[in-house]
Image (tube, helix red, strand yellow):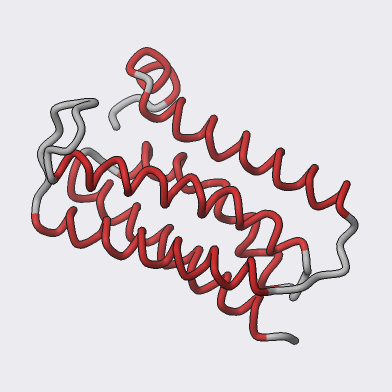
Length: 151
């Protein structure tokens, strides 16, 4: 098996565990479990050595890296979206998620696969939509209350 799937599994697991730890510290795991649900697709595909691990990991890791950039902008008061406060542990976890996402993106871009462009594009769009939906539902007050009671 090539080394790229193993690296993607590692990066996706690091992201998943760091986000779950933040959930445990902040408000409970159910919301963060929903947020990280799409990451299980590239983890399982990567463990199987599938070339689709690349195409399923890319959109998830790009979205997580973008989310961390937004958090860092908030931390450095370079942007104002929401007034959130972060503990030192949460800040550390943003660094882990950001670094794991960046490394995973780099690994995925370096990995040459034989997956056809249409199939790759379909997987990217599907997982990107799933990751975006998972974050949106978990952060939306009305929907989060409806689907994630006690989180």
